Picture 1 (cartoon, rainbow, N blue to C red):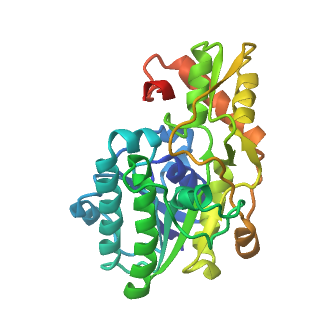
Picture 2 (picture 1 turned 30 degrees about the vertical axis):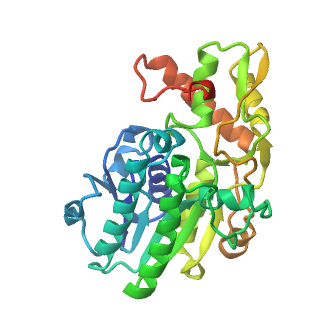
Length: 339
């Protein structure tokens, strides 16, 4: 019998890739629920796969949207949220309203269902202050205290909602007879990831022939995890009996500087100009790298695609997309000097 699986936020980058992994590796029927579906489903699913997927488009910040959903799903992935630094800086109040509404509405709906297994997606942003200000160990494990640098800074509104979500799902689970697992994503990237992230911004700027090319935050480090690995790790966290009530860091331990990333993209784009150091974005942590020993031990998961190979796939996708679309789905790059 096919499993019935719901992905709230199924139109997002991670949601669509989890759906692709599930439909190709599990015997299941999927419901993808989201406010909008901007991605081309034909790039993710074959016609036969599409027959196993039902799309629900509605605004789930309203409780009435959940009336369209059945109540007998075996697994529910709660991935929906507003994400992106630009959004937090421009619309911090909406980030708070939307993300907290989605969390509370989902939990109140779960109380009315037969669902026994739920996964909530969180972020490494939840402990940005702990590593940046309190000098916590890097690579960072799941026992890290959650902390942000400045509660008045709109940059941290996304992290605040995710801290709230982690507590809400784990405590509702204890009170309402379902199992919850938290996964914290760490710099997941790949084709069609959106247009508000560092890699698509870099491709856009190289295509615009920026020279000299400004390297914002060149000394900062990140560990980039290709989306195929992120999706697989997330599904394993949902399916493992040992994962109930647990938190997992999903990511890569291959930590690189932003300068290395920029020059790697430049090489793929055929850039032969000059690089110059530029200001660092405020609120952005200097280092980020997860300790993934827990996910290795319990789930047997670790990244299977190198950041270099994943970057090649990603840069090629964006270069092709920009070349084919005169009006593209991106906000455009905003340089630090203009903020």
